[in-house]
Image (tube, rainbow over all chains, first blue to last red; front, side):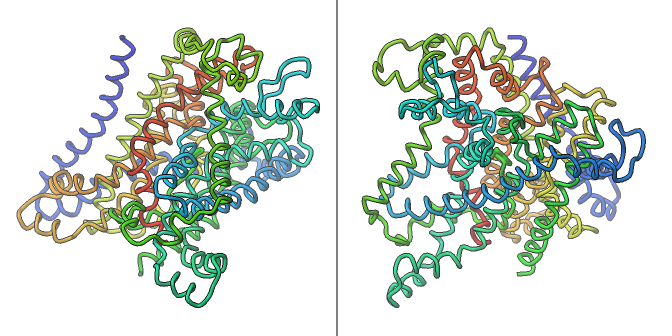
Length: 325
Length: 312
């Protein structure tokens, strides 16, 4: 009970404190003489937001860059040594390769599957469409940790003397084979692929929702025109619909791509990067937390940041174009 | 979401000018686009199988969570299909909530998530108002900066923040995660809210200012009530994101008194050898809150996701 009261108090203090901040600032600025009030006020409105962005994103990002050139406890500069050591290490190169596979496979599969469901469900009756979409969309609300727990019951392995409690192995054993330790087999990247399945499971719904809305906004006349010209359904889809929703396809792709580059929970909770399934964010966490190596951790995220810069440039350019329009 | 990101691993990176009424539901008023009701049996079977595959893992979890410990540890959850009405138990839930401290973690997650959702919205709404309706030096530059920051991974900030918190003695406190989530969520929040506010009619703001209303009054009395759809969309987004987050809770709160439910669950997965059934009850408790929020508010959420980005 006391815990619940404490919890409520903590929530109220946090939210109330933030509110009071604005009232005090506004009260103060309204006391300023005429012109100054209007000069200062915009900065009062954006001030707290800019402050948190500065303190929690920009300052630490710059600091991380600095740390990436320093030793493990950030006491001495070592130049590019963290980067060269990491890139020379077999383990980190495997991490990079795994992350690259995630980047190549997951966004593409998510977009294609999301598109397929969006297009096909559109042909069902209104009620079945809604049910189908809700079912596919639902896993998006589930955390990476929750998803890992759920899929644990698919991939679980027991010795062949016991009954299998994992669905996949139950099928394998039922077919007369030996049980397989799914997440420990890195032949043909099997375990990484199985972890990707979990991520795909959580993301297809997101792609489906955006793509479905885009498809529904394609003007009917363009479809009619194509049909009158004798185009098949498939031709209409690829030549008429896809070009018109291309911007949405790119948006979905980029959003999933960014999520995949940072993927952490799923790998951390299932294998913790063992059995050759490591990815950048997990290795970052382990360098920082387990090994206490700020230099390596910094260098890893800076490399991640460099990989994201092209996306950022695209984003900014796209935004400027949109604003100008 | 997962991840997400955002989401859930996802960040609605291109939620441009929001259009309140252009939801999928809204469009359905127009004639069906493709071939409504014309699915052949192959399409129907394909979708039915896909839905089954999509649901199956979660059903397995749900069923196992209500099985008796011995049964859950020795046979697969599908074996209940042979005798569907026997041996159900809520023992796992009792045990996980009382003996495994899940109850505390569950409560903590609310304490983490509610302020970490409201504070960024408050900050971002003020900032979005200024970006939309006020003129000031550096406005365009600052906004471009925010657009650029949309895709910056949180990880880039974690090492220095951990040190900053250590110096300020904030490690393990709720304030540490509230502030971190406020900072990390800010670019997306400002971006979404400004996009929406730009679609509001300017004449209303102008007439309010002629009537002598200050910006502060206009903001609270006019803009906030008019922006509810966008505020709600971002609120759901941020709520799911913070509740589902593992990394930040793990780093800044860890396993102390203020442990988050995701961290607790990750701990259970790590030691799952002896207690599958506890893991399932814990997992179901963890995912129940975002699932409920999601199902109840799906419309707002979808609206938030699709606004603007559909136009591209």
